[in-house]
Figure 1 (cartoon, rainbow, N blue to C red):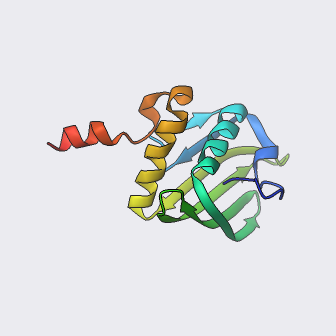
Figure 2: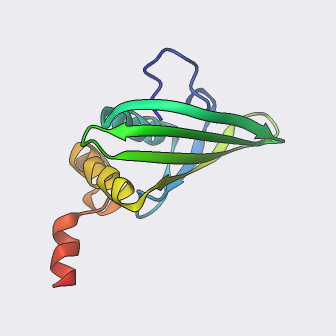
Length: 134
């Protein structure tokens, strides 16, 4: 989720140093406040638009939903579960994206814009998967 509209981001300001981010567009979790912030910024560069649809909390779990349109024109929906500890620090964020085509497109786009920073094995790589399917 991008915070380019000037509103307070629902979790970036509160990330613990060792926070973890998991998601359907990632092959493995990433850890660390700075890494998560960089990845969220990269996601924002791939969105043409983004509209929050829900934000609420149940005890230390905060739920975030939004709709976005990728720069490629695909629409996607995202659901985030933000897990906080008793002090309010965010320890884990889990993001799911749908539909599949948009999620795969987002992951591939992240590979292009952030693959060098995070490792090429973190994101979907269409060329590898096309070869494996042959």
